[in-house]
Structures are given as structure tokens and as C-alpha cells.
Picture 1 (cartoon, rainbow, N blue to C red):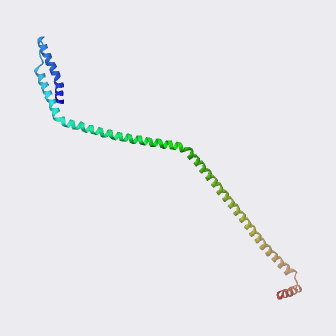
Picture 2 (cartoon, one colour):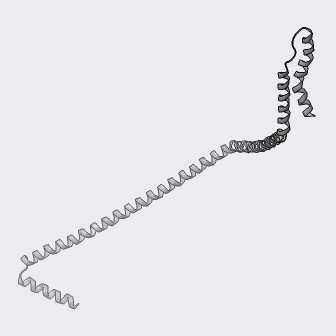
Picture 3 (cartoon, rainbow, N blue to C red):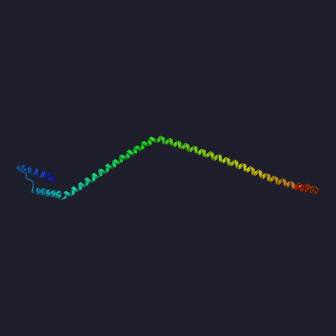
Length: 187
């Protein structure tokens, strides 16, 4: 059917020319030259041969293209559905974020306040511990200084007593001290 239609379309100009040829002959015009008719027949044979020999490859080519386009259309439809689903998911996530934003900010502020309080408490504990350590160190230093002063005072007083005893004490005083010492040791 297609072949006949194509043949008619190709040969239609020749039929029109042939119909007009008789009209031109009556007026003294020459008809269509035979060379043109042979060229027309050759072109017609060429077109029919091309259609006959390339019909299957052209049909398979266009059916393959059609299948590829249909497959691409299915893929794009699937991709569009996936994109729409992702769009809906993203939209829901954004709405959830908007809805929970205030709550999240309140939680963050509360957490920050708790951390601030905890840091202040730790700082106070450290300050208290440092103060106690400083007081204890000061007490120990005072006690050590007092002990050193007592030892120095005792040393100095013994040195002074020795000097006084060696200079001011005579032999009678020494005998008396020895007797007292012996009496005290015996008691």
C-alpha cells in the first residue's frame, strides 16, 4: 500500500506533464523530450530500488530508535518519579526542621546554661581548693619558720650561756654545780 502511494507521488508530476503535452502540441509547442522521460524512468527505478532494498534496514533502524526513545522515556519517567519523591522528602525534612527549630534552640540554650553552670561550679571548686592549699602552705611555712627561730634562739642562748659560764664562773661555782648535778642525777 505504501509502495503504491509513494509511486503515485513520484509519478504524479509526470502524469501532469503528460496531460499538458497534448495541449501544448495543439498550439505548436513541442512535447516533453524523450531524454526527460528516460531520466524520469531511471529516477523512478532508482527510487523504487532504494525503497525495496533499504526498506528493512530503515524499518529496523526506526523501530530501534523508537525502542530507544521509549526506553529513554521510561527512564526519564522513573527519574522524574524519583525526583518528585525526593522533593517531597526534602520538603518534609524542611518542614520538620522548621517545626523543631525553636525546640532545638531552646535545648541548645538550656545545654549552654547547664555547661556554664558546671564550668562556674568547677571554677569555684578549683578556687576553693587553691585557697585551702595556699592557707595550708602558709601555716606550714609559719610553723617551719617558728621551728627554725626556736632552734636558732636555743642555739644562740646556749652559746651565750657557755660564754657567760666560761668567763664568770669560778672553781667554787663549778664545784657547787657539780654537787647539784650529782644530787639531781641521783634523785
